Image (cartoon, rainbow, N blue to C red; front, side, top):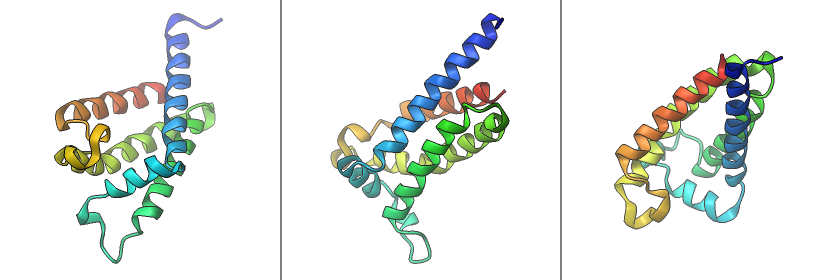
Length: 130
């Protein structure tokens, strides 16, 4: 029988899995994907970098894989670490959107709330991974 902490972790893993899978799938829906491509900061639009379309596709795949990875015990820990690195890697796009609310509308969450939300997500991923 599971104790309260184990139940809480199970619920957290399911919630994070659903959130990451949902966010990942949105990368393959036309309108959100277009917005995400536009959110790629100019510094990452170099000739040697993958195109914004490729980056959005890769990040979508990472989110879906991360969500699924949290559900299997054998991959849970490494998935949690990978999701932390992922959340750090995609933060510049969120910061860029925050600087341009006139261009990105609802996707342009103000910087500090987005920063604290990202830190909360990182913490939750680590808690789900253990």
